[in-house]
Length: 297
Ligand SMILES: C[C@H](O)[C@H](O)[C@H]1CNc2nc(N)[nH]c(=O)c2N1
Ligand SMILES: N[C@@H](Cc1ccccc1)C(=O)O
Ligand SMILES: [Fe+2]
Image (cartoon, rainbow, N blue to C red; front, side):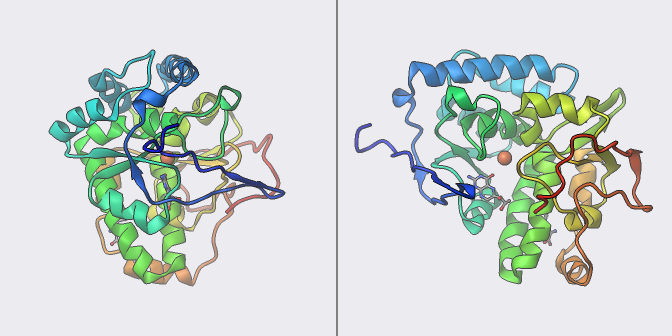
């Protein structure tokens, strides 16, 4: 690694497992420094997920991934993807080292900049890693930034995050749950059935299958306040998936000022990730098989 290339920040492995190290720098994509193994990891994940997502990812995801013409056999160049994005929705990718402090992350989104981790996982991490890498960000998040409504939603979300940061920690927790159950683990109802749009799902082979075909999870119709009160899991498949009818529904539901909602929710208890309420619009109640006992955040 020459001095000009970003140095990989070593993750602190402690007895509590993985502890995220937050960095703020924007880095140039060190395309020349990717190893053959890195490109091979991209190729393996890309081709495998493209196969798994046939009939499982929503049509907007599939169509927009085609529009990028991402190379299947080598890590795409951010500059090439940025040309497509600039023309379509004005979004730009910026390279980052990894997780950003929340306010830094929100500020990027509020300015139509999507932070993409520059490094890709190691071969032994193919099926799971505890933090977003290049494959999760590029393959999972970038295609929907070409969809005008979703692109607007992501910018509005960023602005809402900056605002929530000024309101307080509880507001941020509520808003992070919304990101988790839509942008990362959302499902959408199509005329031919439920499909995936959440990036955390599309970048995971196992969860792409589990979220639609396992009897274990609950699948519940989108409800903004319900989602903002609902805890989630960061280390296993989700116990509950929320289903939107359209990106317009998501945009319309989140247009109002959230301050009264934050105030209202502050009086109410959070909801465990696996609960189903009598007021829920239930697609199906899960069997709960294989669920871990605790661990909701
Ligand atoms: C939305 C929520 O704050 C979330 O944990 C943020 C924090 N920082 C991040 N930083 C990067 N680079 N990528 C992300 O997805 C996030 N997620
Ligand atoms: N309307 C929200 C901001 C927001 C928009 C879109 C998604 C999420 C949050 C607020 O006033 O705080
Ligand atoms: Fe993500």
